[in-house]
Every structure is written in structure tokens, then in C-alpha cells.
Image (cartoon, rainbow over all chains, first blue to last red; front, side, top):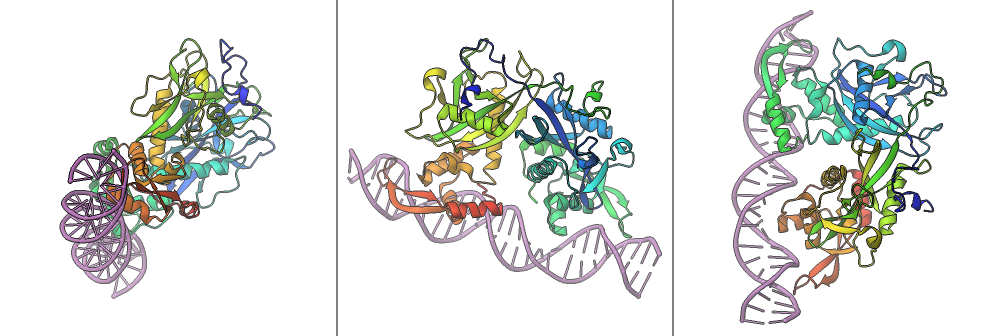
Length: 241
Length: 241
DNA sequence: ACAAAAGTGTTTCTATTACACCCATGG
DNA sequence: CCATGGGTGTAATAGAAACACTTTTGT
């Protein structure tokens, strides 16, 4: 409490920025993708001592000439080659000792990407690897907390806005969609009720094609009706599963 | 995109913090209280040119020796004298030019406080004033955006966790509670259904006392059953109005 | 012919909404 | 005695949950 005076600008100061101490700022990105029946996170091997070789989120420092959101985008682009990725700020971690060696304030973002055959990550340099969220290895610093915060945030967000489609390919089956939701929400969703609920929203277009990979019968592919989706978003609708 | 190389630590650097540029960090607090039938925000007159005299949120710089959350708490304490206030980080604003004169990264928090007769704010120095959220004056910098973000956040949060009680005195009437919810959510709530829903949760204790200020008949006072409230919180329940 | 996943309808139950009247009291 | 806000019950509706069987086809 003795430090209170540092925290409101003193009235005597004509330029109240002067004399304030600057701090290091960074961004860390929880890059999420969907594979099989589970959400996955992209992790790298941390390249420096004393945590060299431990698993880590992907991050970067915020330089004076980039917006903080852009810093996050640049990090994702560097790691995956992708631009125009759905991203969202999750939380800013600013405890004094969260990084032992230095005061760093880090804003955590999540990114939702489609894992496609063409996707190339920085495997050679950083051993970038996809981990299913049920099997996350120990992470450096407070990255485990960041991951938790990102997943919590995503779970909550997905109830208001079906962002899940960002994680699926353009065409997908109802089972894939349901598996995705199950993995994000961490609980089973009844097949019939799920299908009915999703279809009632009218945001999906049923295609004539079938995907025959997952079963002998084959299952119909769907595609997101982006116009309708945007319309509902603007109305701020709920997507309660 | 030319700046990508700045954004992942280069592998050659043994101490990857070295050489990074530090930035100014601050916190701004949306201090919310409830008065009459409406939410109010505490604003001050900004004390420096070129915005001297314009209305502003309350903020302060983050110094190297305080956690970012603590910086926010200190700001609230300085302004209201209150500790142990319910606070929550809302969002971090980090665009390059959000403050014209300087690059500042600002984390916005909201604080929920009880406006009580004993509450003294920094009225003399900063003209601290409560504004109803329906009548907010123009604000400096991006503070209007911050306020919007804080209210958006509160509206969403209140569906998962009935944080509204932080804004009410220990004893309150059902009408006060309903008015509060109406003001936060920005829509009318049917009296009977509201009462029923709240009571069904069993988080309120009905007292024998009546408040006679608002009507001749008087209305019963209630008090939050904190044990039950905490129990439900831990279960992560919904409080859907 | 059978295994494996897809697809679909109906019933039950619960929660939400909408609605109107009596109550207690101070003036 | 009446104006004011407080307080309550019920019926109608909509939405969610629970449930089991048929379809298709590759092997």
C-alpha cells in the first residue's frame, strides 16, 4: 500500500508518462486444431536454458511498432504459415515472478485453425507437435495456466457463437461436428438431439456428396451457410448444446 | 510481414530477453456501482493536457514491482479507499496509436463495489463522479471502448455467476435485485418469474425485517447465503435470466 | 450375412412464459 | 378510503431429454 503514489499520475507532472518504467511485453498463442475426435494444441520445444527441451506454447515479444493483436497474428503466421486465422485474446498474465528471470507481461491468445494435409508447421527447428488436449505434457512457465484459460474461454464462447466451424474443413460430416463439440465441451452429446438442434438453426447446407471414410454406409457432408451464420451472429444468438 | 523475425526468439540468442524493447503498461478500472435503478460508473476529470478536464476512467501505470492485478487493486483503493473489492480483468488494449503521444499497453479491469453512505471518493482532486451507464459523457482515448468491453463482459459473466450481489448492500429487497439485473442486462424482467427463479436457487435468506422506504406496505429484505452461493459456484451453475 | 456407423420419430418431462388479482400500509 | 408498490398461483407453451430401431454397404 506504500506504493500507492506511483499509481495515479501525480498532478505535478506535466507529461505524466515521463519517469514511468517500461516493461517487456509478449504474446503466447494457444494454437488449436481438431483431429480425429479430439481438440489438439500445437506445442514447441522451448529452445533456451534453463527450460530447453521442455514443451511450450508459441510466443513472441511485442515490439513498439506492432499492435498487440498483430504480434499474436505474426506468431501464428510464423509457426503455421497461415494468415486470416480466427484469433481471440484470452487473458493477460502479469504477475511479477511468472517468468523467473525477468518481468514480462504476456497476453495469451487462442487461434483456431484447420489442420489440413498442406499445413506445414515448424517441425524441424522447434519440433512443433500437435498434442490432444487430454494428454498435455508439462509446460514451461505458466503455460499450463494459459492453456486452461484458453480452453475455458473457448468453452464459454462456443455457447454464444459456434466458432467451432473455424476448426473444421469446408465440408464436414455431422459426426465430425459432434465430436468436435464433445471434445471442446468435455461431455457427450446425444446424437439425435445434437443433429436436430444444429439443423434447426439453418446454418448448414446439406450436400449431395457423402464421406465414405468413416463408415460403409457413408455420411452426408455439410457446409456452413456463411450468410445465415453471419446474420445470426449479428443478432447475437445462443448456440446452446 | 517483414517484421516476422522480431517475433520469435532467434535461436542464436542465449538470453532471449536481451535486446527486446520494453513498453509502458498501465491499468484502467471501470468502477461500477448500483444506485437507484441503474448501474453507475465512477469517472474522473483527466488531469493533463491535451485532454485536461475530459472525463476518464481511473488508471495507473504498472511498475516493475507490482503484479498487474495488484496495480488495478491499488488504483481502486486509491480512488475509493476500498480493498477486497470484486475485480476482474476484461481485456488488454495494445494498438500502437491508442494513446497518441506514447505506446502504452493498457489492461482494463472492472470493479464491483457497494455505494454506501460512508464511501468517499476522490471528489476534490479529480472530481470523481458517478454516471449512470445510460448517460456517459465523452471519454478520453479509447475509454469508451473499455467501458463497453467491461459491460459486455459483465453481462456475459452474470449469466454464469450471479456477481450482482457484489453491488448490493448486505440486505436488499427483491425489487432492488431485479432493478440491478434489469440495468445490467438492459431489458425488463418479469416480476413474478424473476422472484420465482431467484428463490428456487436457494441462495437467498429471507429476513423478518422489511424495508419501508420504497412503499407503504414495505418489502422483505433478503441476504445472500454465502455458503450455498459458493457451493453452486463451485459446481459452475448457470444463472439464466 | 454381418458388422459398423448413419440416420431418423415420438414421448416425457421440465422450464419458460404470460397473465390478473389481492395485500398491507401511510397518507 | 385510496393510491402505491409488494406479493403470489395457475394454465399454456416450448424446448430439452430420453429413448430404439431401421438403413446402407463393404467385407
